[in-house]
Image 1 (cartoon, one colour):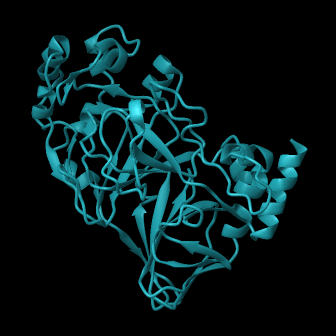
Image 2 (image 1 turned 90 degrees about the vertical axis):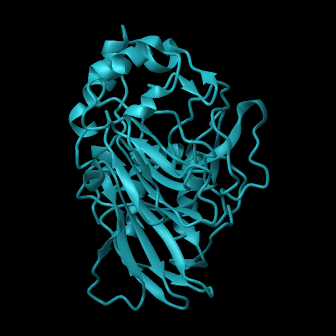
Length: 382
């Protein structure tokens, strides 16, 4: 363990408070990938397709065919080929990575999971239980989440998401469909919304949803609690016990997981649809623009920014806490370290608290606009 700590300190000192992370891809067997994650072959054989990339992840994927460490992010070592996960690094040097106050308040965890969703079919209609139910039934955290739809040539065959329920729907409308459990007519009770590039949605626990095929940057709490309310999915019939009830006594108990007030709001779109919120900078915007795409005004659970830098410009940054850096377009340097979109060894970085809270710079050395995202954990609202 001392050797790993020494290695970690060396990496942090050498890169000035940055940790490069390897891309981690997760397989799913329900829906195909569309090949938008930069993989030559997204097939994972009997495990399905590599259709999710997890960023700065401390969460292991829960899949029917388990693979050791699937979902965990690992550090890219500059010299020694020593395997160290981001989770291990946080345990070894929590104060250097997260800051003393944040580490103490959040059990030495970053506290947020970010994904790129490259799904070829919508995900089945499901929900994540609220805090009281998630802890009572499964001993897990709830999962609040939000989406931002990235610019890409292929939006997929169904860039629409079923979110919530129609305002006149009540539990008695849904109950017989759950009891019968032989079709997908639950989708008739849920409105579908188009997924537009540069926009998103914020989804609270207890709100049923079926994410569509637009390439999605998804941010969420570190949790995998879920209940599937759709019995049949493209000809495949699910096990009610395994996916809907998951230990609940009956269908009525499942219905009580739904946050009916949020799910059936007549103004659902206006309340939960999101667009970037431009952040005004004292030094002007000639060096680049910064916008909240996951606003801290909506939740304390997570937040995130999009930064756009013109060619040849340098963007100055200082934040109140650590963040995950993901480069979506362009190339340049982050505090002197090379970064390049599409290069799996250079597009994902963890910016530790010891650097993030000081002035640091990102420079666009390419010929096109540089676009990157800053992802923050709970209670950080830069």
